Image 1 (cartoon, chains in turn cyan, blue):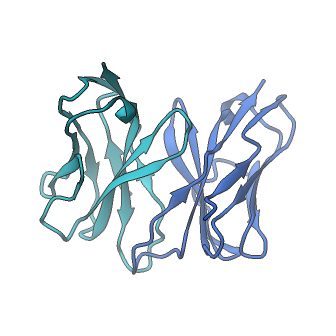
Image 2: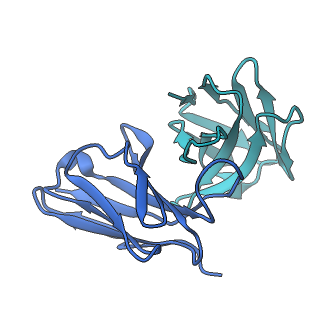
Length: 117
Length: 117
């Protein structure tokens, strides 16, 4: 079974600064997807960024980028130029790409990010 | 277009009562997922539907939990004889298709917060 670990329950960042959220995972599969989701107080889960395991290039979406280290099974999220609207809970998640598996997501326990004005 | 909707938004029930939680997926999405978000356990997968069938029920925590999906659209999660440990946010997600051969994004609803007193 796959597991996702987010060891930092909370982090804080100054507005306009950069913050990195950590995530590690464990799997015996070679093909999979990794995600970062944002959950604001409205509870609506929003996909921030996706990484395919077969791609060596790190994914980037505007101010959000990842550092994907497949051998180390590490997947961190970097938020640049932090904004007040980035304050939320962030979840790291895993999904198999193995043919025949179902596409359920396995989540870490999340990290609460606060942004100081 | 309309996103995933869930009702009710909040539900307070007495221990021992039955509750029904509803999920309306995005029109045309054949795959539907239920997840549970609780303080102690984080975000957990409960059940996955492809059309009206549920090929993966492995996350349902006990036989008090059941779910159905009719007409390949609306899904209902039923919890019988509720216990205090059932208190959580129940999230529903849908995607165009299930399976893993092709990536389809999961879109989440706002969740139902269930409180068992």
